[in-house]
Each structure stands twice: as structure tokens, then as C-alpha cells.
Image: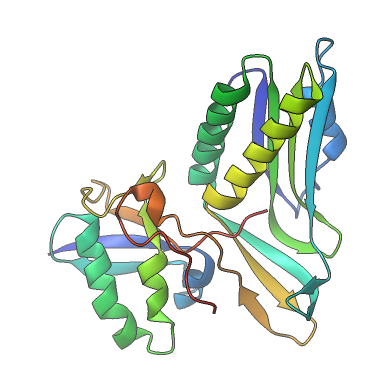
Amino acid sequence: MRQVRVQLFGAFSELDPTREIAVDVAGGRVADLRAALQALLPVRWPAFRAGLLEYSAFSDQQRVLRDDDALPDDGRVAILPPVSGG
Amino acid sequence: MAEQDQWMIVDRAGAAIDAAEAIAFVSDPGFGGIDVFIGKVRDLNQGRAVLGITYDLFEPLVMAEFERLVGEVRGQFGPRVKLYVAHAKGRLGVGDTAVVVAAGTPHRDEAFKACRALIEAVKHRSPIWKQEHYQDGDSVWSEGCSLCHLAEGAGPASPPPAA
């Protein structure tokens, strides 16, 4: 089990005023983080629309990650809900 | 950064985006065509009166993505092209400029096409989110394009259901 710090953006930023949450993840892949959040969101934030996770991507500081990518060594990941710039 | 291109994030708390700066940047004695897209905050969204928008950006990734997008458009329309992107950050009011994209090329056709390609890519692929503030006091995060497709199989590419 490792702890991943997840930076929060868009709608996810409302989960915590620090705009970051710590998530315990069993495994070293992005898919493992996704699974951990799928379990955590309905329990810790029952009012949040957890289905948004299904359409959200993850990234490090420089690129969007695939689900089968390894989690970054520095333990920092951003969660990116569907974008709406412009 | 290639000298012929420029991309930036403009914090609205400190400055406003200046479209004239974009035009000056993409100008060149050899360019007869300049196309500029200016995106502004409008006063109505889905029938609801809007007071303003707050833009949230993941800045390091936005800058990396802008560089990639400019590179792709340059690859398609270059080398005789100059490109410019500026996107606002923070709280904007109705009528404020949210984004400016500009392209300068020798002729108008490439300028139109390069500018269109770049603004579409910026809207669909940049990690930027807008929260619309309505006159009735409600604020809602707008959900547009899922980035899952960029991760090639990380998740569904289809847009999310309406909020």
C-alpha cells in the first residue's frame, strides 16, 4: 500500500479546500489509483457525483497518463475532469 | 520555445489578455494573412443569466500542452507560420477576454485554417476548467471534453452525461 497525493481540479477541487487529497493505493499503476478513488469517493464524499471519475483522466506535471502507466515516483498525480477551456 | 510561436497564461488578477499583442506577435513582413480568434465571456449560458466565469488551470500541464499543440499546428501549416495562444486564469466578468489565438501566414487560407485548428485543440485538450457564476447565486462547473482519449484507453472517450 502506498500513499498518493492527488491534486484536485475543476469540480474535484471542491472535495477539499487544500485542493489535494491523500489516497492509499494498493498497487503501482494509475488504474490502481482509479480503483482506490472509486471505492473512496462514495464513502468519504457521499454528496459528490462519483460518476465523474469515469470520465476523468490522470496526469503528472507534464503529460496525461494511461491507466496502465506506473504512478509517478514522486507520488503526485493530478485528476483531470472533462475540460472546458476557451 | 520557438521564436516564431508564443503561448502563455494570463492571471486576470494582474492583467488582461491583449489581442493587439497577439496581432503584433504574429505579424511579419512576409505575411499577408493574420487570423485572430477572441473568446469572451457571454452573459447567457443555456438560458441562464451569467455574471462571470472562474477559470481553473493546471498550469504546468497547460504550458506543456500548449507547446505540444502549437508544435502540431506548426507541423501541419509551417514552416511559414507564426502562432500565439493566451488563456486567462481566475475570475472574469461578462465581456472579458478568456482566450486569444492568432496565426500569421503568407496567405489568408492557411491563417484561417491554422487559427481554427489551434483554438479547437486548445479547447478540447488543455487542462482548463470553467466555473460559471449565475445571476441567481448558483455556480456550476462546466464539463466539456474528456481527456481520457489522450491516454489511449485509460477510459471512455465519450463526453460525460449532463451535470
